[in-house]
Image (cartoon, rainbow, N blue to C red; front, side, top):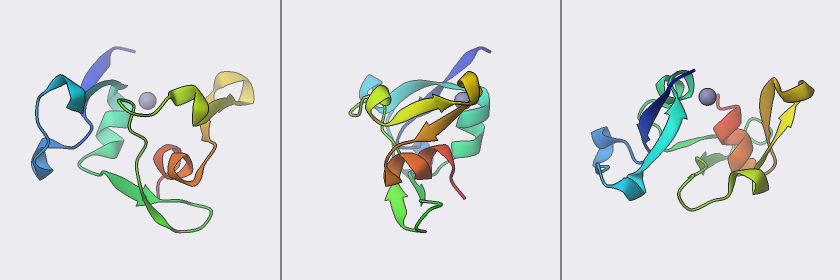
Length: 85
Ligand SMILES: [Zn+2]
Protein backbone atom coordinates (compact mmCIF):
# COMPACT_ATOMS: atom_id res chain seq x y z
CA UNK A 1 0.00 0.00 0.00
CA UNK A 2 1.47 3.41 -0.88
CA UNK A 3 2.17 5.77 2.00
CA UNK A 4 0.92 9.34 2.35
CA UNK A 5 2.34 12.21 4.38
CA UNK A 6 0.58 12.76 7.70
CA UNK A 7 0.72 16.07 9.55
CA UNK A 8 1.21 14.94 13.17
CA UNK A 9 -0.26 18.25 14.31
CA UNK A 10 -2.87 18.78 11.58
CA UNK A 11 -2.66 21.88 9.39
CA UNK A 12 -6.27 22.54 10.36
CA UNK A 13 -5.14 23.26 13.93
CA UNK A 14 -1.99 25.18 12.99
CA UNK A 15 0.42 22.31 12.28
CA UNK A 16 3.28 23.18 9.93
CA UNK A 17 4.69 21.55 6.80
CA UNK A 18 8.13 21.28 8.48
CA UNK A 19 9.70 17.83 8.52
CA UNK A 20 9.41 17.49 12.30
CA UNK A 21 5.62 17.61 11.90
CA UNK A 22 5.43 15.06 9.06
CA UNK A 23 5.33 11.27 9.15
CA UNK A 24 4.78 8.59 6.51
CA UNK A 25 1.44 6.94 7.14
CA UNK A 26 -0.82 4.53 5.30
CA UNK A 27 -3.74 6.23 3.58
CA UNK A 28 -6.37 4.42 5.66
CA UNK A 29 -4.79 5.39 9.00
CA UNK A 30 -4.30 8.97 7.86
CA UNK A 31 -7.94 9.29 6.82
CA UNK A 32 -9.07 7.73 10.08
CA UNK A 33 -6.90 10.04 12.19
CA UNK A 34 -8.16 13.14 10.40
CA UNK A 35 -7.51 16.32 12.39
CA UNK A 36 -7.31 14.53 15.72
CA UNK A 37 -4.32 14.82 18.04
CA UNK A 38 -5.99 13.00 20.96
CA UNK A 39 -8.33 10.03 21.41
CA UNK A 40 -9.92 7.98 24.17
CA UNK A 41 -8.16 4.96 25.64
CA UNK A 42 -10.77 2.23 25.00
CA UNK A 43 -9.87 0.54 28.31
CA UNK A 44 -10.36 3.58 30.57
CA UNK A 45 -12.05 6.27 28.47
CA UNK A 46 -9.22 8.66 29.31
CA UNK A 47 -8.64 11.28 26.60
CA UNK A 48 -4.94 11.11 25.63
CA UNK A 49 -2.50 12.46 23.03
CA UNK A 50 -1.93 10.18 20.04
CA UNK A 51 1.41 8.42 19.54
CA UNK A 52 3.95 10.78 17.96
CA UNK A 53 6.30 8.89 15.59
CA UNK A 54 8.78 11.81 15.63
CA UNK A 55 9.45 11.67 19.38
CA UNK A 56 8.40 8.13 20.38
CA UNK A 57 9.77 4.73 19.29
CA UNK A 58 7.16 2.46 17.66
CA UNK A 59 8.47 -0.86 19.02
CA UNK A 60 8.33 0.50 22.59
CA UNK A 61 4.64 1.31 22.18
CA UNK A 62 3.08 -1.30 19.87
CA UNK A 63 3.29 -4.93 18.89
CA UNK A 64 1.74 -7.03 16.15
CA UNK A 65 -1.07 -9.45 17.00
CA UNK A 66 -2.76 -12.33 15.19
CA UNK A 67 0.35 -13.18 13.17
CA UNK A 68 0.80 -9.59 12.05
CA UNK A 69 -2.73 -8.76 10.97
CA UNK A 70 -3.21 -5.86 13.37
CA UNK A 71 -1.42 -3.59 15.84
CA UNK A 72 -1.91 -3.60 19.61
CA UNK A 73 -1.04 -0.61 21.78
CA UNK A 74 1.01 -1.37 24.90
CA UNK A 75 0.24 1.78 26.94
CA UNK A 76 -2.91 3.88 27.40
CA UNK A 77 -1.75 6.41 24.79
CA UNK A 78 -0.96 3.62 22.35
CA UNK A 79 -4.35 1.97 22.88
CA UNK A 80 -5.96 5.35 22.14
CA UNK A 81 -3.88 5.60 18.97
CA UNK A 82 -4.42 2.07 17.66
CA UNK A 83 -8.03 1.61 18.76
CA UNK A 84 -9.58 5.07 19.09
CA UNK A 85 -13.28 5.41 19.63
ZN1 LIG B 1 -2.22 2.17 8.67
